[in-house]
Length: 295
Image (cartoon, rainbow, N blue to C red):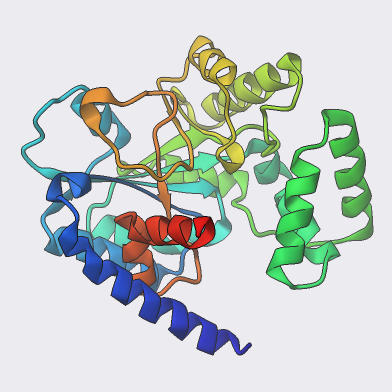
Protein backbone atom coordinates (compact mmCIF):
# COMPACT_ATOMS: atom_id res chain seq x y z
CA UNK A 1 0.00 0.00 0.00
CA UNK A 2 1.27 3.51 -0.81
CA UNK A 3 3.16 5.02 2.16
CA UNK A 4 1.52 8.42 1.72
CA UNK A 5 -1.90 6.76 1.70
CA UNK A 6 -1.10 4.86 4.91
CA UNK A 7 0.23 8.05 6.53
CA UNK A 8 -2.96 9.94 5.64
CA UNK A 9 -5.13 7.07 6.85
CA UNK A 10 -3.31 6.96 10.21
CA UNK A 11 -3.61 10.73 10.50
CA UNK A 12 -7.37 10.57 9.86
CA UNK A 13 -7.70 7.84 12.48
CA UNK A 14 -5.62 9.97 14.84
CA UNK A 15 -7.96 12.93 14.35
CA UNK A 16 -11.06 10.82 15.03
CA UNK A 17 -9.50 9.28 18.14
CA UNK A 18 -8.25 12.66 19.37
CA UNK A 19 -11.78 14.05 19.21
CA UNK A 20 -12.88 11.30 21.60
CA UNK A 21 -10.67 12.95 24.23
CA UNK A 22 -13.65 15.09 25.24
CA UNK A 23 -15.29 11.99 26.75
CA UNK A 24 -12.33 11.24 29.04
CA UNK A 25 -12.02 12.92 32.47
CA UNK A 26 -9.69 15.93 32.27
CA UNK A 27 -7.66 14.70 35.26
CA UNK A 28 -6.37 11.89 33.04
CA UNK A 29 -4.54 14.51 30.99
CA UNK A 30 -3.17 16.65 33.83
CA UNK A 31 0.33 15.16 33.56
CA UNK A 32 1.81 14.01 30.25
CA UNK A 33 4.95 11.91 29.86
CA UNK A 34 6.09 11.99 26.24
CA UNK A 35 9.06 10.58 24.39
CA UNK A 36 10.45 10.65 20.88
CA UNK A 37 13.35 8.97 19.13
CA UNK A 38 14.43 10.85 15.99
CA UNK A 39 11.57 13.28 15.29
CA UNK A 40 11.57 15.76 12.41
CA UNK A 41 11.91 19.32 13.73
CA UNK A 42 8.55 20.22 12.16
CA UNK A 43 6.67 17.51 14.12
CA UNK A 44 8.54 18.32 17.33
CA UNK A 45 7.67 22.02 16.95
CA UNK A 46 3.99 21.31 16.27
CA UNK A 47 3.74 19.26 19.50
CA UNK A 48 5.48 21.99 21.53
CA UNK A 49 3.17 24.66 20.13
CA UNK A 50 0.12 22.53 20.88
CA UNK A 51 1.19 21.94 24.49
CA UNK A 52 1.87 25.61 25.13
CA UNK A 53 -1.36 26.74 23.45
CA UNK A 54 -3.26 24.32 25.70
CA UNK A 55 -1.67 25.70 28.87
CA UNK A 56 0.78 22.91 29.58
CA UNK A 57 4.01 23.78 31.35
CA UNK A 58 6.86 21.67 30.00
CA UNK A 59 9.07 20.76 32.94
CA UNK A 60 12.55 19.36 33.38
CA UNK A 61 12.96 16.04 35.16
CA UNK A 62 14.26 17.92 38.19
CA UNK A 63 11.04 19.94 38.27
CA UNK A 64 9.07 16.75 37.61
CA UNK A 65 10.75 15.11 40.61
CA UNK A 66 9.65 17.99 42.81
CA UNK A 67 6.05 17.39 41.74
CA UNK A 68 6.04 13.68 42.62
CA UNK A 69 3.76 12.94 45.56
CA UNK A 70 1.45 15.92 45.01
CA UNK A 71 -2.16 14.92 45.60
CA UNK A 72 -3.64 17.97 43.96
CA UNK A 73 -1.87 19.34 40.89
CA UNK A 74 -3.03 22.87 40.12
CA UNK A 75 -1.50 23.05 36.67
CA UNK A 76 -1.05 20.94 33.58
CA UNK A 77 2.50 19.70 33.07
CA UNK A 78 4.37 17.68 30.46
CA UNK A 79 7.79 16.08 30.46
CA UNK A 80 9.61 15.32 27.21
CA UNK A 81 12.48 12.95 26.52
CA UNK A 82 14.36 11.57 23.52
CA UNK A 83 15.71 8.02 23.42
CA UNK A 84 19.01 6.76 21.95
CA UNK A 85 20.85 9.98 21.04
CA UNK A 86 20.18 10.29 17.32
CA UNK A 87 22.34 12.75 15.44
CA UNK A 88 19.33 14.57 14.01
CA UNK A 89 18.40 15.58 17.57
CA UNK A 90 20.85 18.45 16.97
CA UNK A 91 18.28 19.90 14.55
CA UNK A 92 15.87 20.38 17.45
CA UNK A 93 18.16 22.86 19.20
CA UNK A 94 16.61 25.90 17.53
CA UNK A 95 13.12 24.91 18.77
CA UNK A 96 14.42 24.02 22.25
CA UNK A 97 16.14 27.38 22.63
CA UNK A 98 13.41 29.52 21.05
CA UNK A 99 10.52 27.96 22.99
CA UNK A 100 12.53 27.24 26.15
CA UNK A 101 11.73 23.51 26.13
CA UNK A 102 13.48 21.45 28.83
CA UNK A 103 14.19 17.93 27.58
CA UNK A 104 16.15 14.85 28.59
CA UNK A 105 18.13 12.76 26.10
CA UNK A 106 18.74 9.13 27.08
CA UNK A 107 22.08 8.00 25.66
CA UNK A 108 23.40 4.59 24.65
CA UNK A 109 27.14 5.01 25.19
CA UNK A 110 28.47 2.33 22.81
CA UNK A 111 26.41 3.87 20.00
CA UNK A 112 28.10 7.23 20.66
CA UNK A 113 31.47 5.50 20.29
CA UNK A 114 30.57 3.34 17.28
CA UNK A 115 28.07 5.55 15.43
CA UNK A 116 25.07 3.21 15.24
CA UNK A 117 22.66 1.09 17.29
CA UNK A 118 22.47 -2.68 16.84
CA UNK A 119 18.85 -2.42 15.72
CA UNK A 120 20.01 -0.53 12.62
CA UNK A 121 22.01 -3.55 11.50
CA UNK A 122 18.91 -5.70 11.89
CA UNK A 123 16.93 -3.29 9.70
CA UNK A 124 19.57 -3.43 6.99
CA UNK A 125 19.85 -7.21 7.12
CA UNK A 126 16.13 -7.87 6.57
CA UNK A 127 13.73 -6.81 3.87
CA UNK A 128 11.97 -3.51 4.47
CA UNK A 129 8.71 -5.00 5.73
CA UNK A 130 8.15 -3.62 9.23
CA UNK A 131 6.59 -6.85 10.50
CA UNK A 132 9.62 -8.88 9.46
CA UNK A 133 12.05 -6.41 11.04
CA UNK A 134 10.02 -6.27 14.24
CA UNK A 135 9.96 -10.07 14.56
CA UNK A 136 13.71 -10.24 14.08
CA UNK A 137 14.35 -7.51 16.67
CA UNK A 138 12.14 -9.32 19.19
CA UNK A 139 13.92 -12.62 18.53
CA UNK A 140 17.40 -11.14 18.91
CA UNK A 141 16.64 -9.09 22.02
CA UNK A 142 15.54 -12.26 23.85
CA UNK A 143 18.88 -14.02 23.28
CA UNK A 144 21.33 -14.54 26.13
CA UNK A 145 24.37 -12.25 26.05
CA UNK A 146 26.72 -14.68 24.26
CA UNK A 147 24.24 -15.52 21.50
CA UNK A 148 23.24 -11.86 21.20
CA UNK A 149 26.86 -10.70 20.81
CA UNK A 150 27.59 -13.43 18.26
CA UNK A 151 24.61 -12.47 16.06
CA UNK A 152 25.21 -8.73 16.24
CA UNK A 153 28.94 -9.06 15.53
CA UNK A 154 28.10 -11.19 12.51
CA UNK A 155 25.69 -8.53 11.23
CA UNK A 156 28.22 -5.75 11.83
CA UNK A 157 30.94 -7.62 9.94
CA UNK A 158 28.78 -7.77 6.83
CA UNK A 159 27.36 -4.24 6.87
CA UNK A 160 28.80 -0.74 6.86
CA UNK A 161 26.46 1.99 7.99
CA UNK A 162 26.60 5.77 7.87
CA UNK A 163 26.76 7.30 11.38
CA UNK A 164 23.27 8.13 12.64
CA UNK A 165 24.08 8.64 16.34
CA UNK A 166 25.58 11.73 17.98
CA UNK A 167 29.33 11.99 18.16
CA UNK A 168 30.94 12.37 21.57
CA UNK A 169 31.66 16.02 20.76
CA UNK A 170 28.02 16.67 19.81
CA UNK A 171 26.84 14.99 23.00
CA UNK A 172 29.13 17.16 25.11
CA UNK A 173 27.83 20.24 23.27
CA UNK A 174 24.22 19.26 24.00
CA UNK A 175 25.01 18.52 27.65
CA UNK A 176 26.15 22.13 28.07
CA UNK A 177 22.77 23.45 26.93
CA UNK A 178 20.93 24.73 30.04
CA UNK A 179 17.62 23.20 28.92
CA UNK A 180 19.00 19.74 28.15
CA UNK A 181 19.71 17.01 30.68
CA UNK A 182 21.40 13.73 29.86
CA UNK A 183 20.28 10.30 31.05
CA UNK A 184 21.47 6.73 30.55
CA UNK A 185 20.02 4.22 28.09
CA UNK A 186 22.62 1.54 28.93
CA UNK A 187 25.91 0.78 27.18
CA UNK A 188 24.62 -1.47 24.40
CA UNK A 189 20.85 -0.90 24.24
CA UNK A 190 20.18 -4.43 25.50
CA UNK A 191 16.86 -5.78 26.67
CA UNK A 192 18.03 -6.41 30.24
CA UNK A 193 15.51 -8.77 31.94
CA UNK A 194 16.85 -11.96 30.31
CA UNK A 195 20.51 -11.04 30.77
CA UNK A 196 22.69 -12.12 33.72
CA UNK A 197 22.90 -10.00 36.85
CA UNK A 198 26.53 -9.18 36.01
CA UNK A 199 25.57 -7.88 32.56
CA UNK A 200 22.65 -5.88 33.96
CA UNK A 201 24.85 -4.19 36.55
CA UNK A 202 27.58 -3.48 34.02
CA UNK A 203 25.10 -1.94 31.57
CA UNK A 204 23.64 0.30 34.28
CA UNK A 205 26.87 1.35 35.97
CA UNK A 206 29.26 1.60 33.02
CA UNK A 207 26.89 3.82 31.03
CA UNK A 208 26.33 6.04 34.06
CA UNK A 209 30.04 6.37 34.81
CA UNK A 210 30.98 6.99 31.17
CA UNK A 211 28.36 9.71 30.76
CA UNK A 212 29.48 11.38 33.97
CA UNK A 213 33.07 11.45 32.70
CA UNK A 214 32.04 12.80 29.30
CA UNK A 215 29.62 15.47 30.54
CA UNK A 216 31.01 16.30 33.97
CA UNK A 217 27.47 15.94 35.37
CA UNK A 218 25.71 13.53 37.71
CA UNK A 219 23.64 11.04 35.75
CA UNK A 220 20.52 10.12 37.74
CA UNK A 221 17.92 9.41 35.05
CA UNK A 222 17.54 6.12 33.20
CA UNK A 223 15.39 4.75 30.40
CA UNK A 224 14.92 0.98 30.02
CA UNK A 225 15.83 -0.15 26.46
CA UNK A 226 12.66 -1.32 24.68
CA UNK A 227 10.87 -0.51 27.95
CA UNK A 228 11.77 -3.96 29.35
CA UNK A 229 12.19 -4.19 33.12
CA UNK A 230 11.54 -6.38 36.16
CA UNK A 231 11.14 -5.66 39.86
CA UNK A 232 14.70 -6.89 40.41
CA UNK A 233 15.99 -4.54 37.71
CA UNK A 234 14.21 -1.61 39.33
CA UNK A 235 15.95 -2.36 42.63
CA UNK A 236 19.30 -2.64 40.89
CA UNK A 237 18.78 0.72 39.17
CA UNK A 238 18.13 2.34 42.53
CA UNK A 239 21.25 0.70 43.99
CA UNK A 240 23.28 2.03 41.07
CA UNK A 241 22.30 5.59 41.95
CA UNK A 242 19.45 6.35 39.56
CA UNK A 243 16.63 8.50 40.89
CA UNK A 244 14.05 8.22 38.09
CA UNK A 245 13.63 5.37 35.60
CA UNK A 246 11.32 5.38 32.60
CA UNK A 247 9.44 2.57 30.89
CA UNK A 248 7.36 2.53 27.69
CA UNK A 249 4.09 1.72 29.45
CA UNK A 250 1.25 3.98 28.40
CA UNK A 251 -1.05 4.28 31.40
CA UNK A 252 -1.71 7.80 32.79
CA UNK A 253 0.80 9.42 35.12
CA UNK A 254 -0.59 9.92 38.62
CA UNK A 255 1.92 11.92 40.64
CA UNK A 256 0.47 10.98 44.03
CA UNK A 257 1.15 7.28 43.52
CA UNK A 258 3.89 7.10 40.93
CA UNK A 259 6.67 4.51 41.02
CA UNK A 260 9.90 6.46 40.48
CA UNK A 261 11.55 3.42 38.90
CA UNK A 262 8.92 2.59 36.27
CA UNK A 263 7.47 5.90 35.12
CA UNK A 264 5.24 5.47 32.04
CA UNK A 265 5.85 7.36 28.81
CA UNK A 266 3.86 7.60 25.60
CA UNK A 267 5.79 7.39 22.35
CA UNK A 268 5.40 9.63 19.33
CA UNK A 269 6.74 7.76 16.29
CA UNK A 270 8.97 9.70 13.93
CA UNK A 271 6.65 9.36 10.92
CA UNK A 272 3.49 10.46 12.74
CA UNK A 273 1.29 13.34 11.68
CA UNK A 274 0.10 15.85 14.28
CA UNK A 275 -3.20 14.14 15.15
CA UNK A 276 -1.74 10.65 15.25
CA UNK A 277 0.87 12.06 17.64
CA UNK A 278 -1.72 13.82 19.81
CA UNK A 279 -3.95 10.75 20.03
CA UNK A 280 -0.90 8.86 21.33
CA UNK A 281 0.19 11.59 23.73
CA UNK A 282 -3.26 11.55 25.32
CA UNK A 283 -3.46 7.75 25.33
CA UNK A 284 -6.50 7.37 23.08
CA UNK A 285 -4.56 5.59 20.32
CA UNK A 286 -3.34 2.89 22.69
CA UNK A 287 -6.83 2.29 24.11
CA UNK A 288 -8.21 1.85 20.59
CA UNK A 289 -5.36 -0.49 19.65
CA UNK A 290 -5.93 -2.58 22.77
CA UNK A 291 -9.66 -2.84 22.09
CA UNK A 292 -9.01 -3.76 18.44
CA UNK A 293 -6.69 -6.62 19.34
CA UNK A 294 -8.84 -8.01 22.16
CA UNK A 295 -11.99 -8.38 20.13
